[in-house]
Length: 348
Image 1: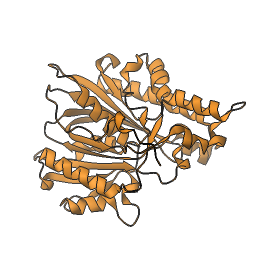
Image 2: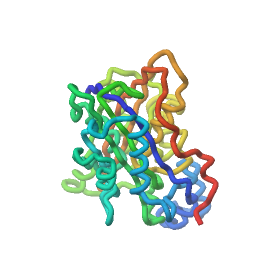
Image 3: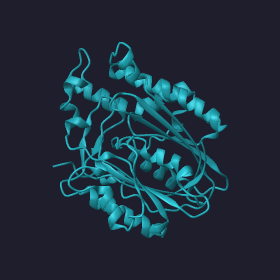
Image 4: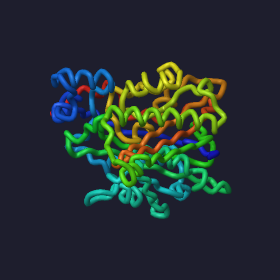
């Protein structure tokens, strides 16, 4: 789908409080270990291949509703966008509606956004990308309009953070997309919803793939999706400066995707892989913001891709790809409230 909207603002919060990968894997040794492998060997192999090291977790006094509301307040203050011009409030994860306080409803009321319908987009690893893709249809071209995306991840149980192919962390992300010029232009959106696993369960043998085969199937199908999408967009990989993706597993992108696509590993945005863990689509907000913030001032346009992969509970996979054109030498937005040196206090 052709797009003519733009990213106006991105920000994220990744807690400085963390646990080590070792601590989480020790709680999952039965699922982690292969044959003839000690626990230390299994942990080291996972760390070496995944690139994950320290997993961000909310501290006992950190409240997700307060954090999200403060971030939306900062967004409004920085962009000076009038709340009346925000037409939709996108909820990117069910956690924002759970519990005795609905975070997304609190944000809506606190910041005078009650005129905005709350739209839940529950592909948690891709909701922000989907919202960006839908912006072309949702925003009226005859007036200045915006959509605001709030997304988050919060895990309550330490052991359940490990899911075989990655480890989940905590965090919050906010994005503002508009139909006026902004930090970067959205030009194309391609998607693929692959329901092969559910079809097999309902009509076939219904066998479950192991983690290794599952990862390979996701990568193989992802490579085919990327190639087809680039062709649809009229792009070559040589036209692309960076591919921005989730922080799930280092070797998957550094080795598998790079080898299968025939590109150097540096084509992928791997800068944040070791610091934080996988935070659903907060990863995409974080990586896109950091990529844009680090761009040198330039006189010519460049192109990046935002690549979202969402794996459902059924193990069906949803792929999304956005073409992002950076056309200006000006850089806007505030610095993120996270730096790797913030990781100086281990969880008590």
